[in-house]
Length: 523
Figure 1 (cartoon, rainbow, N blue to C red):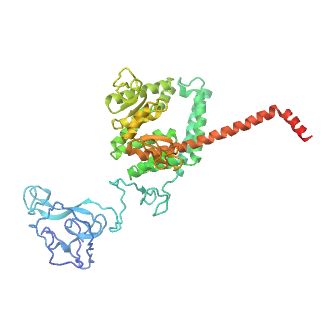
Figure 2: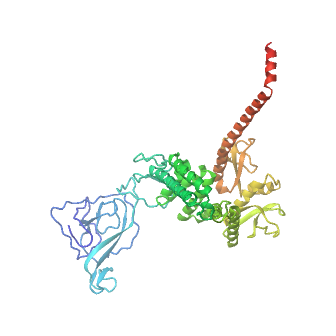
Figure 3: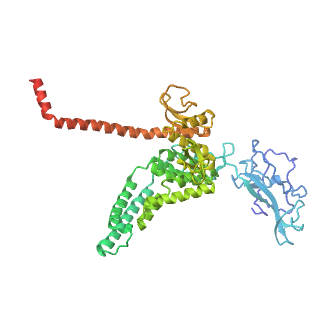
């Protein structure tokens, strides 16, 4: 069927009242009606969504007859709907309806004004037609099923796991897809493992060839840089080769599974990516924290959480390992001292951040005998000649949080700091959390640092946090306990080993005397 403008179809209103007034349509709109065309009923939906007020381009002065007989299909769900309708009753999608036509004066397609004439010059429009534009798409619900999968970023910030196979959404903390039973936290795939293996083999071949070329085929032709000495090339070839095999055959670390899924969800659902990154940071080893922190900072920027992003970027910039990798390359190329280069670069960056006002420094002043905010030169603002100690660098909004970190570190060595810390706790500017052995959980403590349920219990691993960071403090306490357990096991193994070694030494030294004594006992 062909018509002017949008494709239209004849239909009979199901249960409709013919006396109901409808919106006008252009009189010149011609609709052909084949006799063998099947009727498409209008699907009534009494519970359809309320349509807000929209600009109404169709005026009562423009008459086209009864628009109930003219049907088009919803571009989102495919359901039939009236030609001039602003919303789809099936899925709730909203449309902006306009009338367009060719203006002979303007010699182009123009919008119609309220009287049906050219909106620019007021002339008559030729071949007018109705034009609709989708302005709002409604997500699938049980009441409005739509056979269309959407992967747009949700605006409400709710984390959802997208299945890598069928692309359906799943609730967070779900192990398998509810639709196709695919694992939602998979290990490294075969392709990744083969890439590591092939990369390791190729790297070893390249380094081995350089070693052969510089020290076997053409001795003395190697450039005078550290990277090209025989030890670096030979040892590097072996390390790269075995690393490729280890990476290909290893069991995927749990933190890496979360990190990989977070990367995949950065465009699908950044809030799920953020949740996965936080899970990864809780279980990742210390050497992996920098990369995870950088990934989280970039994600914070993407979703508009600038304060959290600035906090993570500052931690990265002021970390002792901020320029460690760069220093290693510089040292390998020109033999410079890696530690000296790293310290100089870090100091220069910290000074620039403090002078720009993007960061603040807090530390302990020996004359004030308190933890105070320092100036851009990292000196006490009251005693400019006194340089602060145990300095922490924070964003302007985290000055108090920085003071709490310094107080927690120095309180055992400076008893007078307990008064400052107790003042923060009494005035509820800060909260204390710790591990209660009787509760067997991380709990919030009172101002005296006692468990509110078991006041006499000896609380361990106390952390001081801001009132809105209590849950984060509890996670920190539990993570510290997890890190303590392996250390305790190692200590126990060492003690038992020393006991057995001591017994062995004593037996070897006094074996003859012990044998004589035992023989005398039996005789």
